[in-house]
Length: 230
Ligand SMILES: [Zn+2]
Image 1 (spheres, helix red, strand yellow):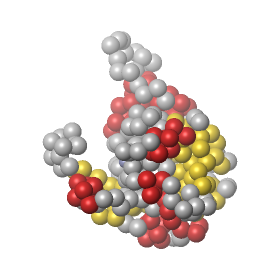
Image 2 (tube, helix red, strand yellow):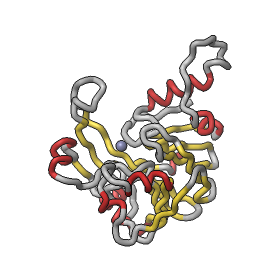
Image 3 (cartoon, helix red, strand yellow):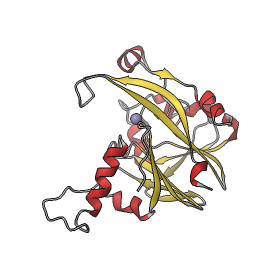
Image 4 (spheres, rainbow, N blue to C red):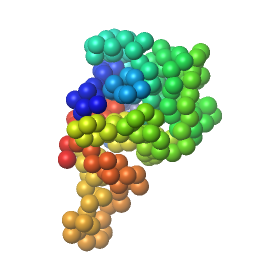
């Protein structure tokens, strides 16, 4: 695997209402998935914005790119996908999951428990016909060189993917951070004391040091086109 072989797939956009945006203004947000050809086959991280009820539709006003079309733009078809990972099970990450029956679907056990408890996501997109969950309790290498690392914060069961390529590692952060800038600040928080800064200092996310151990050359996000590089 090479860094450049980790490809983004464009799954559409939605409008985050002013009530949810920290700026007090509505914000258009992208929905990105990622594909990579691993030694165990093509891996897809996240599958797009799901169809929910009318109220949700009116709230987020999504413009979807069907996962088949998104994969097609990357020269792939749904049948090519061997492994599916969801960073978490919110509506905007699992929309195309039912397109992958029988394919191992990796998520944290606590995330599936949360989703099944209700009031969290679209149940039909979680327990669809042929759903084949491979439940993880913490960190795991799910294919040679492909590591899933828990990154709780946005939700308790959030996870990110690290792809160890021949020319360096790529972190598929998902929504561990919403933006590359937030990652950048957190990465500096880890290093602050080492850089000679005195307290008080920001507390980095508890899993940030683990992700940085992979010495990522590139970090990509579910809702930000910006890419972090060291
Ligand atoms: Zn999201």
